[in-house]
Image (cartoon, rainbow, N blue to C red; front, side, top):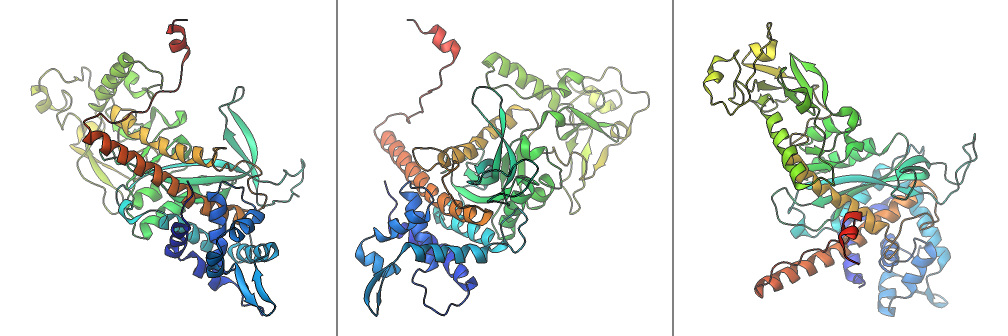
Length: 496
């Protein structure tokens, strides 16, 4: 089902991207028949029709419009010699002018400020007003976008796309789980439901395209923090270990300063004990008593194929670990410092060093051999925790607890975003989808593709909501998704 032309034009007009680009273009001597607004409309029409990102397709999409729309958009004009229809050379010329003014004089692997602002405005304009405040949670991820250019020969840097570079991507195909590609990283933030909120349409709210060096994390952090600067509230930010494993200054600290709550997977190198602070053990983003059992501190996340019994046992261990955690007794001040208290002081465990805790019932863990020379975390009522302690791994829920596992499952919304962008049945951004080289052309095309994708997601979401309401009115249960994946166990259990 095609998106109505009026909807695409409304997105472009609401974003005000066209007049911003027009203001950057040089004033030519001759009249330019193709306005930027019409160019962006043609690009979205091309992508909505599931065509590749070719300028020839933009030209064909514009001249295929009804005659009244062609006259209104400037595709046909009255010249001295009579009516004149837009030519491909005019499309190519106008697109080249736009790319030139949106590019940087000295490319550095990131979009220019004008291009980044246009991308933000186009995506924000594609989100209806009734959905802008339904959820502040975002699922972040990146994927690969191959350049149409061939990589430079070994030992050289000369190729048709000097801004592209070598990157690494994971593969689900048989054989090695990773491979190299030549191109860029596409980062996107997808709206997802709140932890205890109703479902929301998984709309892409922010994106950026960046070089594979130095990486996508720092480039995307600037995009997310700019949302807070624009007055958009940041809630839960869900990300995998690729983001969490970076330096704290590259990801965690800027997002916390912007008001976000991190929910992320931890890299195996960041799990378990990572030093001490005033005697307390730093592990998985929290502080624990020195006498915490080592087996609890080394708990890892629950595997995807875990049984119900394994999940119950794992949750019991993480709940036991939480009893040894130092609890915050104050929120962060303006400098990021807060106070934390011993779990014996807060009544979670029994410890001879805290006589008051020994009156608690015996269903709590008890420290049998307290240290002979208690450290500050055991001798003082509270300790001061500076922002540098567990700055990279501190997050909203204890890792790897059941609450963290349930909340982290919302991150799959970002993967579904990229699956729709790489679906051959719709618009696949595989190599050859766009034969233009350079960061700016690819960024502008993807900035037009994501609003089109958002409209498809909105239509599907509205259809599901209407079907759920119809079934509820008929007294039927909500329709559930059928499990499609078959495992070896299920196949073996199926009788011939």
